[in-house]
Amino acid sequence: MNLFKRTFMFFARRNFFDWMPDKLYLKLCYKCHTGKKLNLKNPQSFNEKLQWLKLYDRKSEYTTMVDKYAVKEYVASIIGEEYIIPTLGVWDRAEDIDFDSLPNQFVLKCTHDSGGLVICRNKSELDIEQAKIKLNKFLKRDYFYLHREWPYKNVKPRIIAEKYIEDSSRIVPEDYKIYCFGGKPEYIVVFHNRFNDEKHLSETVYNTNWEKQEISLDDHFEISDIVEEKPECLDLMLEFAHRLSNGMPQARIDFYIVNNQLKFGEITLCTASGFQPMIPKELDDELGKLIKLPTNK
Image 1: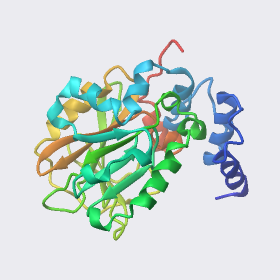
Image 2: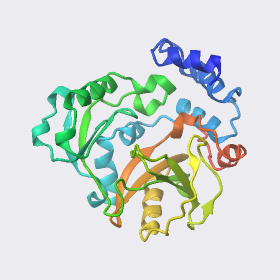
Image 3: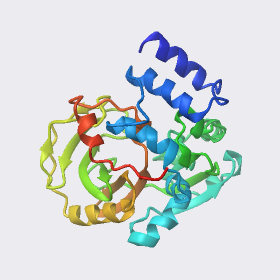
Image 4: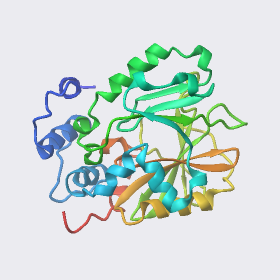
């Protein structure tokens, strides 16, 4: 990481630039992460167009989509309640969580950000005080200001508890991330060993015919040699991804497959906040061609 990026992100994470207009901030942020000048008048690449969408594609329903609590009802109305991971509770503060009422295994997460997550596989081993400290720390964070992802600006910070889902064949279910453009699924990224500290996180990218692609949509994760069998519910997963992303220039729709049952994960409107290096580098431009920007800002 170069000195400019280290310095910029140091101050950005401490809210020194909250006063700065979104457009100027994103130009500096884009230069910081990519080393390139951001072209907002005629954006071409995937990452450039995501910056444009942050500024000009602002629909009220996007706030619902990124709210980890509110999105459940929204998605259930489109694909059905049976595909939603059950919520066990919702609270405004970590101190309000009734741990005694929770089962032995559960997941706690903040509704308004990325990273405020506590996974409990055995309640007797959970450090409750440390969990509260972590959750309260993330509750105070305004996720919008770090990368100016507008949908997060008006999400109410809360904590939810979810049912812990566990696949009989592995400790942590695989994470399927479907990249959609104009409502059409194009790529499926499968994350391996997510939330498993003992193994390295890697990814395999497939097209919609379940053919492995020798590419990476984020070069922070190594390309895995794993090639899984085509999921039995692939067609259903792609249909749901289409329904949930329909009408949007681009979106990433995430699912889990738990004991051959499909479960909704989340809707991501700005993957890696539009600062993800790809392999090969030209893939950034190729995916950019698939994003059709709205004609009206």
